[in-house]
Image 1 (cartoon, rainbow, N blue to C red):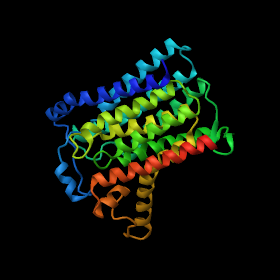
Image 2 (cartoon, one colour):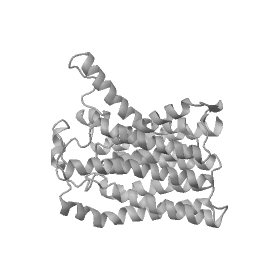
Image 3 (tube, rainbow, N blue to C red):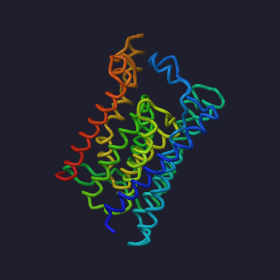
Image 4 (cartoon, rainbow, N blue to C red):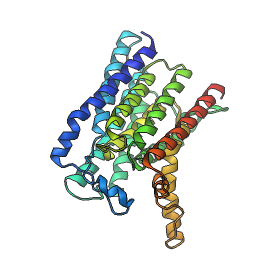
Length: 333
């Protein structure tokens, strides 16, 4: 069976599990009263979303994990066996699950313990860096090297600095994806396009293997979740979902040595993160002045009159454009 058919089936299964599980999870979360608390610092009209169930990321986590594990194992059994690529993919999936676990703890504290801020920033960072240290150590044991692919240059060996830089990159991207989850459908839509173009890049690079299946599974899972999360959202993914997505985005890229390409395809994540960093820094330096109406930057446009739908469409199209540029760099670089 061609990898394209495998990928299509994997995406469909992931979509189906994610979408159908919402039929049961959303009412269950309502019953448990696991509703999102809308903070006063956000746009005032978001108050009407008060009580919308959170932790909905469990839908696509279930879909992505089940479809990826089953398809990767079956593909390996029917082809060349369980090799290094499959081990990289499963290791990345485990890393993403650990990040989702951190998000789950954070969500649980917020909705059950009624502590709006959840885990402290220090607690989150300690857990996140612990996960990434374990991930990089396991990847090293599996044979991963310290090279990164640089367009028009080739493979560049970073040596020991690879681990320091990549630890910062993974934690940074994961939190950037978390910050992107601020309006209905935004994080899921952007991540769908990231996964779609990473899958195309995998094919261009000749990775007709488990890398393609992982990307297809993520794309399908995100679409399945959007059935419930697209505006007006019936459920939010919560930190459970957004931290998992951050981890899985890194897992897709690292399995293919596409570290820099990931930063280009996921540019909107970085824009969201740096908008917060700039806002906070400028606010402190200028003693109360702001660059943006509100950060992350999707709230800046929202405060300027853009609808949530318009923001999702524009940000998604920018992501698709970045994906096309990344694809051309891979082909010609």
